[in-house]
Length: 190
Image (tube, one colour):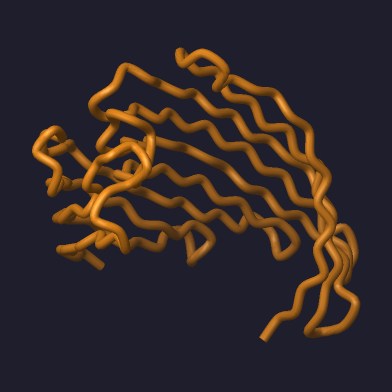
């Protein structure tokens, strides 16, 4: 189903300036046209959108940020036991880095879940994103991969574990990293 989407946003901060002396309050707008679709007897669903985004800042040291925008998601269910998703996004995010008005984020990711048994699932995830900080020369490239298991304790509760590796390659001194993390989660479905 085709759509037109318009968003207006005001980011208001509690204090008049941040720790670096910048007035971070801003106003943003984006317009997007796109389509939600379903193919192959609903085994393949998704959406895609393209548009334009702007963000203007109260602080006159920051120029108005604007860019072409896109987003998309593709969901594939090849069997009753397996589902996979692929997505992409481009957005402005706030930042408090000195001299930067915002973070222009572009990312792509994939997620696969496969039921090993009726109560045990294997999860795989991979994400790549690029961040360009407006107003300064910093650029980050982040990679995030994980593998995990999820066990249904009951129809409404689950226990999950996740082994994750996150890497950042940045042109800013001291901002690059490589870390491994283990997550354990107890959750409730409602």
